[in-house]
Image (cartoon, rainbow, N blue to C red; front, side, top):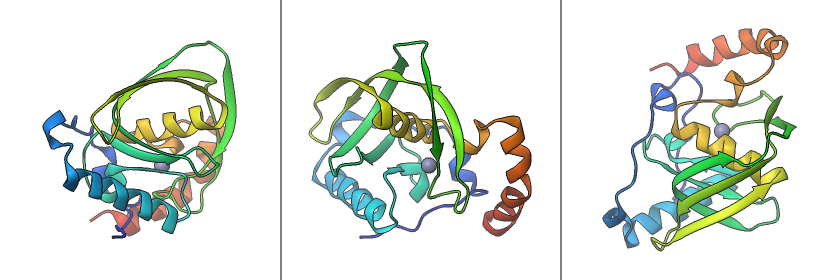
Length: 168
Ligand SMILES: [Zn+2]
């Protein structure tokens, strides 16, 4: 099943999402996660967080850039280095806008996978960017809030238009 993507201006994108209870992780939930993956690929995304399909829960799916999918539940991300990296980011919820964001280069992420198992990974480069971007969605934060002041001015008008279209 392909979900509709909620866009900039939709209030659900600004909410802090709720933790998933361990007893929620059943076959229905796994089907939901598979549908999220299907939606992500259908929309040509490399990550998709549940709030982006209107579900305010701490869950996202992502691809490592090489077709390896992670289904991430209740993530906790910590930077493990002061070193930062700059990547041009985009978002299915903010169509047509691509801007550079500076983020920690190396992170540790702890989460629960689709089988209810604890996972602990140290990640860097591309996957570190994707994970941080998706994790931000769970706190109601969009990448356009993290771009430089100049970039913010450049995209202000476009964001205003998107908000007008999508505020329901
Ligand atoms: Zn996004």
